[in-house]
Amino acid sequence: MKVWAVANQKGGVGKTTTVVALGGLLAARGQRVLLVDLDPHGSLTSYFKHNPDSMEMSVYQLFQDAGQPLQSLVQSVRLPTGTDALDFLPAATSLAMLERQAVSREGAGLVIARSLATVAEQYDYVVMDTPPILGVLLINALAACERLLLPVQTEFLAIKGLERMMRTLQMVMRSQRRQLPYVVLPTMFDRRTQASVGSLRLLRQTYDQCIWPGAIPVDTRLRDASRAGVPPHVYDPAGRAVTAYSSLLKFLLSQEPEVRPMQQVSS
Image 1: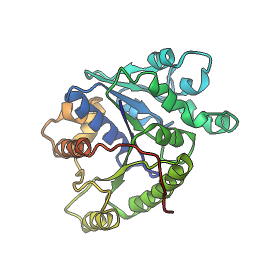
Image 2: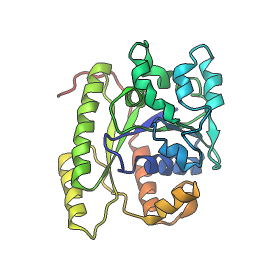
Image 3: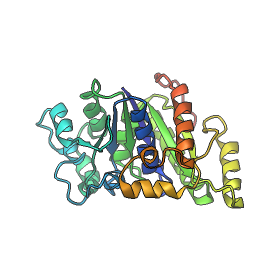
Image 4: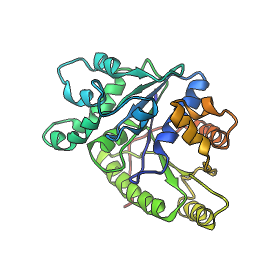
């Protein structure tokens, strides 16, 4: 089972859309896919027409019900998306309380890794949506994943947010003593604007060794797919953004890394 996390310490850069788009395309390729919503705002949960304010069973239970076997707990939380071979673990707004609760709890940063290990035989891929702040939920995602995907909107403020995320990543890699492969994913690219074109050029210059050579374009059909509650490729198979996400997935699958113990990470 391969585990990917989609993260950035700035909201509104396309994290949830990227999770659903890649998860849906993997499922369309015959892979068994589990999506995980680790954001208290519950954007992924809302995408699939569930209300994070009223979820009785959610990822929150994985952190709370220590007495119940993890495998049965994960299965109790899991929900279908309506797309074949694509399930998800929903979020609840109660996740926002974890920061206070986790301070004195040993192993709080490994809850998701341990939970996913119990269903490793049931899925080929896990793709996680993460909150835009550094805390126990993002730490859980980084501890559990084998590859990190960093969507960044092609505009100046989003690039500054990516710089914060890179500092967080370096800190986590030092503490975990391992290298975590990552890919920068330019999103919301509008070739008609000089700001977007210039931002993409800056991203490629700054992250030339770890950036996907393409870009996800602005496409209103992504919003329409979200409103319909289906993966973008189901709603608009030939859309511009779906074509770009398909190209991204091919790139990611061709670059599947091996995870090795970290030797040294520069600051």
